[in-house]
Image (tube, rainbow, N blue to C red; front, side):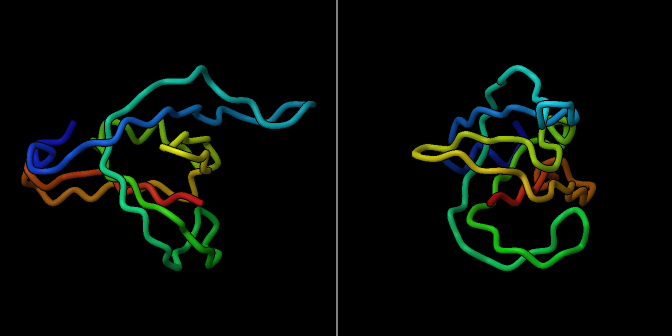
Length: 105
């Protein structure tokens, strides 16, 4: 977990990383859990292809988790399952504020 995490209450989520597409649809890796910070707030964002879409939540996580949160991965939040729209790192150079920002459906 990133260093600034000490000041906030974390949320545990389960992630099934999308690894590809097969004859029967999307293929996902086994589920893993991550502690993140969850912001439940609706906002307009751009997805991985540049389209403007509505995000229902944003997660903040360790930048090392970028490979876990690929586009279209499934994230189980408290009370619902969402899909990753876009994950991007926010590297500022100060380990206390570097983080991964993940927008979700």
